[in-house]
Structures are given as structure tokens and as C-alpha cells.
Image 1 (cartoon, helix red, strand yellow):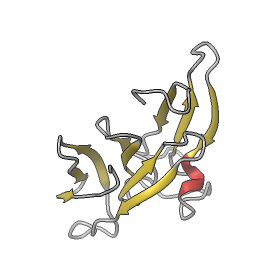
Image 2 (cartoon, one colour; image 1 turned 180 degrees about the vertical axis):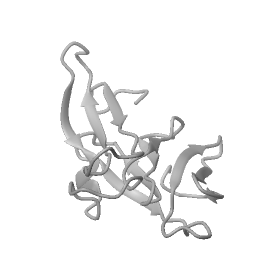
Image 3 (cartoon, rainbow, N blue to C red; image 1 turned 90 degrees about the vertical axis):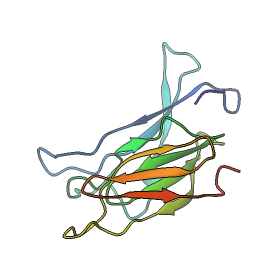
Length: 144
């Protein structure tokens, strides 16, 4: 996060869920307190934010793929593959909250979405790219 939150320097770290070599839980994202960079600490992962993505093995490309490098305030958009777009507010970095979501329709011939990349523009418009086909352009009030 570019500014301290609750007096702490915070870093959001995301796995990139792609091909799995063996049955495994979906990828997630974590929050690290890097106030003391020599002793980073993590008291939170985002797995609890999405009850439909528990830590049981999941098909490939089900979990977290990419947080947007561009965001506003404390709300970060995530491309969450088969779970679509997730908007997570890190105002309390050790109790992040999902404040919005969008699940696109699967591409023609696909059985689920494949949300691959996400970014925002200067107006706060969100652009969500599907790995197979398509682009969704999304307006939100989550940025304030």
C-alpha cells in the first residue's frame, strides 16, 4: 500500500493461480506488516474473505490471479480467475473486507469465467480481461 495504514507499512502479496502440478488449494492473497522490513509479519490471509473458496483442492485457475497495480484509497481490485472480480478494502489491513464483486459470464464454450487481469483508469473505471475472450468495463462506487 502506498501510504501507511493504522500507522503500519503494509504489503499485499498474491499467488498467481495457474496450472497445478498436484491437487492443491486455490491461490490466495496475504497481508504483511513490513513496518520492520527485517521481520515482516502476516496476521491475515484473504482465504476467509471468500467462503466459497475454502482450502480444499480446487481445479486450476480457481483462485487469486492478480491484484491491480492501480487502485484508489484502500480498495484493491483483484482478478480472481473463476471467481471474477473482487474488490477488497484494506482500511483495516488485518481485517480486510470484500466490498464488491462481479462475476462475468463464461466465454462461449467455457464452463466458467477466466478473469485474468484487472486495472483501473484515472476515473476509477475497472477493466477486467477474460483469459479466453472478452473485456468487461465496470463502474463502481467502492472507490468512494
